Length: 104
Image 1 (spheres, rainbow, N blue to C red):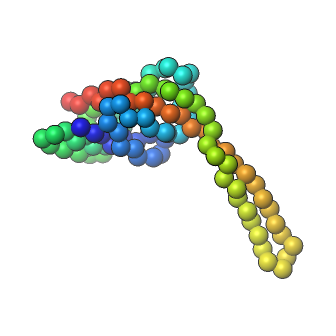
Image 2 (tube, rainbow, N blue to C red; image 1 turned 180 degrees about the vertical axis):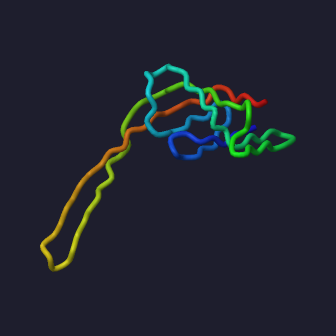
């Protein structure tokens, strides 16, 4: 059984026990996270597709880690104009372990 859910503007697919890396969430390590924007749930026998979300379905997880991703380098350049800009960025993320998938 797996579920597709929306969190932080991105869609993720998860089953119970999976560790998912999502955009930064508020909360300390060990806190529980409850996601109610479940778009689809697939069981062994059938698939439940929401319009746009599945009513009554939710995903419960536990925050495992808060961190920052690898550095991404952004370079702007215009030829023959002596214009060069270099900038780096490290995105914050939260690692969540899925503990339960509740279906209606």
